Length: 132
Image 1 (tube, rainbow, N blue to C red):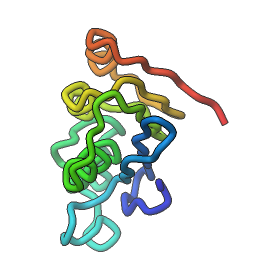
Image 2: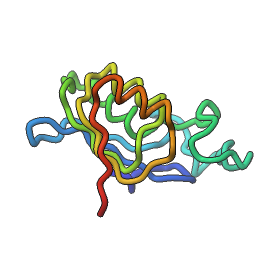
Image 3: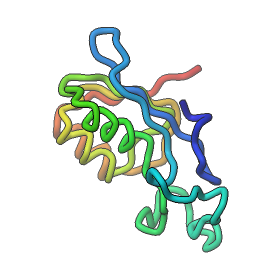
């Protein structure tokens, strides 16, 4: 799923699963119908902004956000689902994950975001790193 990403900096994929069924997928990239970063460039890259900072300057959505949106667009209930993601969720995605009722997150890589980790723990959402 991450290979579909159009981000110049990081290719991230997310899969929502419940009862051994894939409910929705998402990858990071520009909103539907807009030009991709590959075409217009990246403000964060141009400004040498470190990964995980100044998300408001990014024209793209995160993989987790796109997976949640896809489920909503298709009327798929994701409460109690498990999220598999190539990256540990940021604080913005963590808030969406909490409100969507996602129960557990497996991720491969991650940047240190103490607030995201604290919020997920407070919400009782399990967070587990997996290694290939």
